[in-house]
Image 1 (cartoon, rainbow, N blue to C red):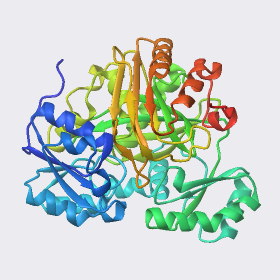
Image 2 (cartoon, one colour; image 1 turned 30 degrees about the vertical axis):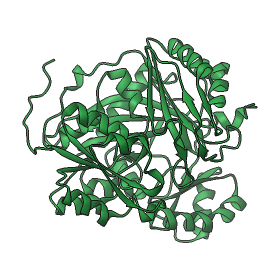
Image 3 (cartoon, rainbow, N blue to C red; image 1 turned 135 degrees about the vertical axis):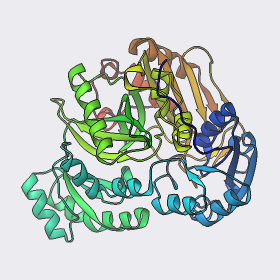
Image 4 (tube, rainbow, N blue to C red; image 1 turned 45 degrees about the vertical axis):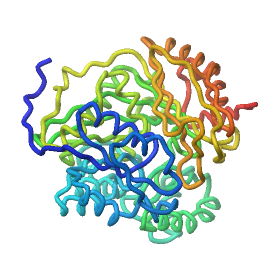
Length: 458
């Protein structure tokens, strides 16, 4: 392939991974292929985790709670500097969208593998990002243009928009930062608790009101930019199957979008990236209504948990691209050189009750699965490891690929039939139910899929 000519910049020879679990293992795998040394950090609870053994070097970072370990920016930077790390890969979660950490790393002469601190700040504020996108001509979900200072103001805005509405934290997303309110009573009940939760998790109690889109799909577009002004998309991912507003199954291509809407969405995602001069890996997230009208939700300024779906349909290594861009090189490929083939579905295997979705920590006694074409496992835990209550209880990401969606579904069904994991509860039985559901097979699902189905998992 012709691609873009490479202009090597920084010599990245050693990378500290400021994260844990499967994403740390994922980054280590690419670094090993690129001949880059890796430094892992771990809490006392993670000392026996696979990624700690896989890294070239590993250092204790502190006690299990994240505030005493994976969020200790000073200690992470101290280790990086002392060990001669050229760069830090933040993974996702934790410090991945922390602009102050990105700046502090740069001040120490260490490359932060991600976008600029300014972009992180701009897109991290949900109100500012909405305004930025609206000015760039990107449609946003109807909602308040600034934070609501009082409950009375929130109620007034909700009355104008019509219920149901979403009450959202300005400083962060995900299930923690939002709640659906069906009426004024629900809004009044949730207002103070949402502000308190926003303050605790995101450092700001600012919230805003947004119109709830019924029967919606959650579809995102992977974008990638370099410091030379090149920007490409790597197609879309449908992330509509969620519990508590958090994704559990993602797939690409979306079985819902018409080709015309798909192309329009991909172009719109590039316009969003261009509006902020985006560099490195990012994701533009949209909410899509029944008529395929789509609206900007947010831009995640990091690698996504579901990035393997994109890797499987494009054959590209997104972590490698992140490193290449971070060390000052151009994107490896032009837009018209990025092809999409087949269909990929990712299932997030959690240590949780498959009905209540409550975490179910404990020791994994055994863990085995069938291997073969189209099966990729990004594991955070293996047999004999213990899932502790301190972190997200995701055990593994099971990524299944097929030449078509029907082949991927059949392969996934066979995979979960033969998956064996004992010692803890997992949501694997839920995936078997989903894969046998006629609506899922037809691609007929929304973000309310799991709530409406109420699968009886035994």
